[in-house]
Length: 439
Ligand code: NAD
Image (tube, rainbow, N blue to C red):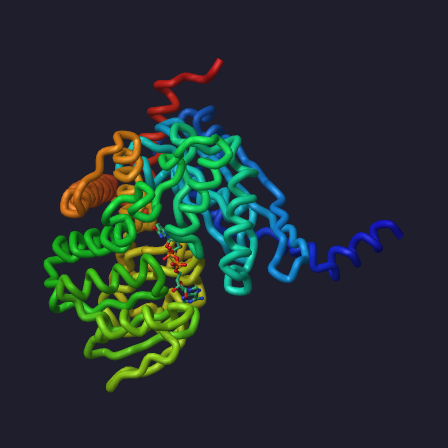
């Protein structure tokens, strides 16, 4: 009886934001990959066991007074997968699908990502299960401040440094920095990266992930002896990552044949006018592609976009977009993963069998965390670089990392995904071994 009453309350009372069952897939994929890599590297079983579990997981409830005066309680997470190579680093995501296993998986991917590009961080991720499209700016601000207060015990410049991810941005980071500053009664800017420039943000951070994706795409095309000007590209997702990668590859000479976002896709095999699309997005109240029209531009669905006839496909939206059901029909011969986890395990196997080259997320989209690292360095030193210096150092690290993964994968005869993961796990395992087990 008591349980029935409780269930009814949870189902009907607006204070409860009902949590859906956790999706297992991405975390399962990550665990399978760790197991496979551990076997191939002949990893010490104890270190393998350490890497299979996040170091620390915090689940918090986040009560927020909504604009109409009601209280809603959201669920938030901050998960630190590994601090073996340095303070943990990873974004904060606001999305209805955020759940424990997804955050675990994304935290582990951050550990590998930081290791594969050789920056001195471990991996973390956070998120709040909410639908930001249904919330006002004031509600998002209050939710962010309360969430920050709840995770404050485990974050910090030398502990764990959050950054933006899906549906969070420089403003979100400013609220986090300000909340910590108010509670600690001092200015704290080095606790988050991806901040606005006047609050200690780095020039070039906003474009960094997209720029990194563009740099590795160009490096791969060079290895394939393909000219950028002869290459057609499709980008799924036109948010922070997708819009910048489309813009930068377009500037480098590629033809962008299709782009899409949550409102649908645009297609022109002759090449889209990216500057006018960017103008449209800037003017749109929700920064969407919907309503864009131009001669020769057709509307397509996201499903059609993924299988369109182009040379390079860049998924830059959410997880699990390329799966067993659509991987056989993907026509691109190169996929560069701008998003985290856009390809399922089954999808990946099909692409591999078909000879499609996939540049994995942990390498392809690492540009964001690389410039986050530059931002953190600048904040700690209170000494700021110009944009050319940021971009020069980003390029140096992305080109070097791509070469290391490319050469290692060829030596081992494995895919770029497996090669990148093997390199990363080996580096993290080396750090765990060098530290030893405390106490
Ligand atoms: P964002 O919120 O700025 O953009 C997401 C985009 O995807 C939006 O254009 C949205 O409309 C679109 N989208 C959502 N659902 C879609 C669907 N079903 N089909 C097509 N488009 C859809 O987020 P972002 O920061 O650009 O992140 C995108 C991806 O890149 C995520 O996987 C994120 O984890 C990853 N990533 C982001 C960064 C970064 O610096 N922002 C760094 C590394 C990885």
